[in-house]
Amino acid sequence: MKRIFPPLTAATATGYALGLLIFIRAFFNGALPLMDKTEARYGEIARLMAETGEWVVLQIDYGIPFWAKPPLSTWASALSISLFGTHEFFVRLPYLLASLVLVFLVGRYRPKKEMSIFLPGLVLFSLPEFFLHAGVVSTDTFLSLSVALVMLSFWEGIQENSSSFWRYLLFIGMGLGLLAKGPIVGILTVPPILLWCAISDFKWKTLLRFPIVIGALISLGIAVPWYVWAELRSPGFIDYFIIGEHFKRYLDSSWSGDKYGFPKQQPLGMVWLFLIGAVLPWLGKFFIVLKQQRIKLLKDPWTLFLLFWLLWTPLFFTSSKSLIHPYTLPVMIPFALLLVHYWEALFFSRKQLALALALPLTVCGVYFSGQVNTVFENSSDKFLIEKLSLEKPLIAVERKSYSSQFYSKGKVEFLSLDSLSSSTIKQADALYLIEHKHYKQLTEERKEALELLHQNRKKGVYRWINDNK
Image (tube, rainbow, N blue to C red):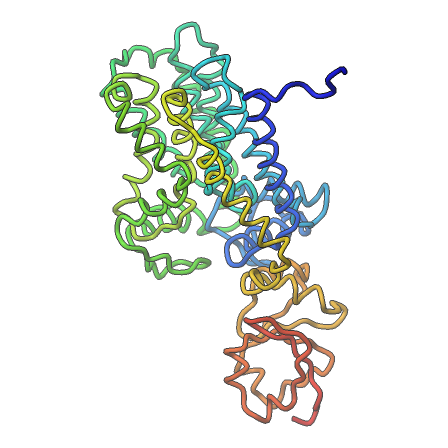
């Protein structure tokens, strides 16, 4: 009998496993709501950009500029929204595509050509931090792509008989990084490259192959026009973004000038714990690599390059208390490539593979158990907003969440708690979003005038039932 499907080799199994992970991530990109505070914020900024047609000055609300980040990720989401609509899948689509670019880019760095081209991508996609950010609306995915372009282009550019394409791509990556998250792209790439050059047997004259002057002009030409235009359209942006976001935030986790964020105070060195969590399924195997291959690792130019790339980012952030776990995302690439480089020297069991798939399978289990609303109702107002008629005024009391702004398509208004408590407020046709902790602060008279329509564990939706109170 003729075989319908080809035999299941290790290469095809690797491809199927990677395809499964990508499918799971794509499914949840459309199934899960945008989460407050960060993801829904960037989703709303992109929705506003697509709706208003304002592509230069990012807005956090109508007419209110958002100075905290450059526009690359917002442009990507806003373009996707303009083409396909505001469904979560399309808001997140650019981040999945950027992750897939990285997955297939690292495939060329398997140590032997007979190994599956999908193996590096499979290891990369099974890292919790990378898997998560293939479907999270943030600036970190595009920063990671930019960092990878710079680092891998440098490596390719110093090889004998390499194409000049790579030496120009390095500067394109740097320019994209300036548009993705700002000067941090240089901080995360230039020092590890120079350290590697100084410690390895690198011949410095090789740098003459790179079109440094023209390349610098390319990088600046990609990014600077937007920076200048944004400053002209919204004076104060450059001072806030360059000085505030890059220096004051790094040095002071409780920076009082932060207009949009929230305190991110962490113990010194917390970045290393974030890194452990980011690579947890493969951490044991990584330590085996360090132990068994330490001599070869330090003598091999490629693995030494990956090691500097991997360690520099957490070393840089060790002295900062203002950080969050996505700061480790750019080093998922060298971590995965180091494992793959020594793949044949390690024993990978089914247990190891199951551990690597634990996060996506756990998310699947939670979703199909029917507990999604319960798990995410504190992180998104989607489920409340979907139950409402947006033909009536929707008023958020004391605080507008970004998810309420996004899912109401910007129709939610703001009202202070003091104003709600005032007897002069009598919008009988309005719906009020009130957090339970704020509802408890209302007078009994005001509570009697409000009828609860819907609620979750964090807030409720109310309407007036007594216009005399």
